[in-house]
Each structure stands twice: as C-alpha cells, then as structure tokens.
Image (cartoon, rainbow, N blue to C red):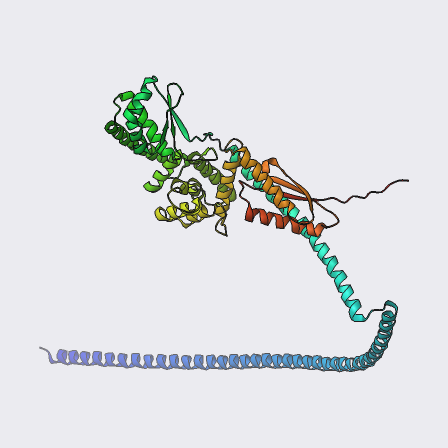
Length: 508
C-alpha cells in the first residue's frame, strides 16, 4: 500500500477526530452559555417575583393597618357615645332622686296631716258613738250584736230563698230527665200480667171419681196429701177437686199427679207415690226449662246452672198477684234500657235486674230479707260484685246505694207499680193510707192532711201562724224522713206542705 495514502488516511482520521472534539467542545460551551442564561433569567424572574411579593405584603400590611385603625376609631366613637349616654343617665337618675326626695318630704308632710285628721275623725267618731248610745239607750256592743243578728236573719232568709230556687230548678231538671228515661223504658217494654192463686182446681170426669180419690177410709187422699204436702178439698162442687197449698211448686206437683191418676184410673197408695215422683220429675224439668227460657228472654247468657234453676222456681211464685219470674224478666229489660240511657253497663244491669228477686225462690227456707238472701246466692255462684251489690241494694236496706242499685230499684218500682201489675186487699190499702195521714198529723203545726193518688202523694195543710216558710222546708224534710223510717210502701210517696196566708176583715 502507498504510505502516502496511509498517512493521508491517518491524517484524515486525526482531523476528523479533532473536528469531532472541537464540535463537542463547542456544543458544551453553547450548553453552558444557555444554562447560564437560563439561570440568569430564572434569577431575574425570582428577583422580580420577590419584589412583587414584597410590594403585595406591604400593601396588605398597609390595608390591614388602615382597617385596624378604622375599627379602633369606630370603637372609640362607640365608647364615647356610651360614655355620653351613661353620663346622661346618671344625670337623669340624679334628677329623679332629687324629685323622689322632694316627693318623700311632701308625703311625710301629708302623712302627718292625715294622722292629725285621723285622730280628729276618731275623736268625732267616739263622740258620735257616745251620743248614739245616749239616744238609743244601748251600748255599742249591744248595737253591734243587734245589727249582726239582723244581718244573719237577712242572710238566712236569702239563703233559704236561694235554696228553694236551686232545689226547684234541680228537681225540675231531674224530674224531666227521670220522666224521659222512665217513659222511654216503659214504652219499650210490654209484658203479660199473671194473677196470683193459692188454689188449683182439677176437673173430674164424674162424681164417682171423688169416692175413688178418697179411697177406703180416706187412705188414698191421705196418701196423696202426705206425698205432696197439699190439702185436697173434696166438697159439694160437682166434678171438681180443689188443691190448696201456700207452696206453688207443691201445688203444681199435686195437680199433675192427680191428673195422671185420673187418666190412669188405678188409684191406690203405691200408684199415688209413683205418680207423684213422676210429676215431681216433670216439674223439675219444667223449672229448668222456664229458667233457661227466662235467661234467653232477658238476654243474660252465661248464668250458673243453679241460678237458672232458682229462676225457674220463680215461675210458681207471686208477689201481690204479680208473677215473680215475669216481673224479673221485665225488670231486666227496664234496667237495661235505663242503663243504656244513663251510660252505665247494660249487661250488668240486665243480669242484676233478672236476679234481683232470686232470694224469693228460697226465702221460705232461709231467714232474712229476700234482697240479702239473693245477694248471698248470687255471690255464691257469680263473681260480679256489681251484680251482688245491686241485688242487695235494690230495696235500700244496706244504708248506701250505688248507681246500679238505683237503676235496679227504679226498674223494680216501675214494674211493680204500673197499673194492673199488683194488687192488694182493700183493708191493707186503707190501713196504709190511714197510717200515712196519721204520721203527717203527728207533727206540730199540721192542721190536716190528705193522702191522694192511691197513697203515692200526701198533701199537708199547716197553720200559717205557727209554721213559716223556713219551718215548712224543715217540716217536709222531717215528714219524708219519718215516712222512710217507719212505713212500708211500694214505689215513692210525694210529700207536699201547703202554707196559706189569709187576710180577713169585715166591712161595717
């Protein structure tokens, strides 16, 4: 190879490397200058931002300072205003204190003058009292007592007048409401009337049957009377035998047994006893059936079987001619209606009304009033204290009476006192009226008295010279209290005291 070429090549390579190195150096120098320029720009920018931040901070500080100064000036102004206001108030208070002091001084002077006037008036009053005592001839204590007595009499008269007005208003309102409730209850209830009887008549197919009933030497009739506990009356009445007994159950048993014997035709002591037992079983079944029917009619479910059985026995009991079972059903309906009108418990009222006379089913076996006996029976088989209390209270024998007791008592009185429900003998009726008039005439100042409205009202004429208006009020209360304590009567008795003032003169 040509050395020149080699040298040229080496030189070229060397020049290329040198050029490359120079290029690198130039590039690095350019980068350094760019970096320095960039750093200078950043520094200049930073200095500019720093100056701007300082300016903004100074402006903010100046602004805050100005705001603070304005706030301080405003607060100083407020304080100055408050100070001026306080100073003005103190000045006003000073003026008010001065005015109060002047008023106190004036009041002290006026009080002194008033004390002097009071002393002068008291002196004049004492002089007047002395003059009045001299003129009237009484001391001040006596005059005061006389005045007090006159005022008491006037107040008592006013109180009595007001009491009469209040009593009249309350009585009118109560009578209207009670009349409305009772009329509604009576209008909604309608029952049959069953007359009382202590004898039963059994028809005979022929008069020859009387001899067979009597038997040889009267053994058949004695056997029948011994088995039933009744009296058989075989007299001259054609084709009839009369059964007499105070016990209606026994009388019914004897009636059924006698009818069976007449139909059967075999009449002897053994057959009589057999028929009596069958009749007794039939009556017991009828008693149970009547009790259940009464419970159904009254709308009182859930009664104890023993109470139902006792209710059935009331089918054969009568009170003043009124059947007790029908009366009990009627009282149950009436009590339920009145309880509904008064807002009381309707179911309790119906149960108490149905059971109120349950004691009459056994009162011939147990001593005591039938109301208490009935309450004991109900307490034994029913846990309702309201029902027990109403049964015990319906005749007012317990000393106190609940609302339910009043309802049952009123329903009992309505059922017993309605026309045709009960009857009493003329002798008992006259005795009751005479006792009522005699009781009223026994009071001093009574001139005469008249029992009217079948003994449900008594009108009493008093002597006006002995009985004044106030005494008339006391008299009517005393008469009512004595009637309630001493007499027995159905329903209620209205007592009216009449005081008449007459002015009589003669023209000459």
